[in-house]
Amino acid sequence: MNKSRGRRPGSPQTREEILRAAREAFLTSGYARTPMRRIAAAADVDVALLSYHFGSKQGLFAAAMTLPIRPGDEIEKALDAPIEEWPERILRTVLRVWDHPQAGPAAVHTLLAGASDPVARRALDEFLERELIGRIERHLGGRDAHRRAMGLLVPTAGLLTTRYLLQVPAYAEASHDELVRIVAPSLAIHLRGARAAPRD
Image (tube, rainbow, N blue to C red; front, side, top):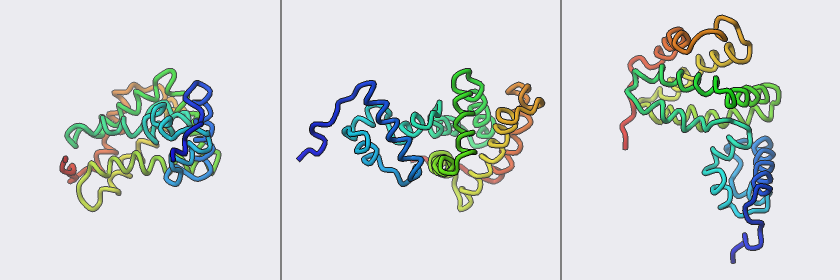
């Protein structure tokens, strides 16, 4: 028997209901422990509508938490290059997104919400661990892949905090080229001796 029979079809109102249900679920249970089916049930829609509107769980989280991009997808693009190019590519991707007139303010709002609300921070932390650190780790070979992935993100997070949240003039007013020149060595040090994982 099809349990979804009789549920509401897709519509602009349905999309908003899905986002409301997803936001509540992610903040209550976290990213990893929130199945798509639970969100669909809370919104009273077929689970297929979630994929139709948002593509994936990552896409739904990004929309529900007002993230302007799908960070995991952006990281994948940055890592599609020789490993020695990763620091610059990661930084330029981050700066391009955060300096976008629409995407940037939304990203700042999301981080501020995570910083001020322990529940929101837990959901955001789980998402970053699973979709960002996890993706970088899968692109690295060796037993220290997780440590190296964390090392790449820590100085990146420092850059975001300094430039966009604290707005320290030396960073807030610097060009992308200047920031890459300053910060990229801090990322590169975590890739010394690293090798990319074999591709399938």
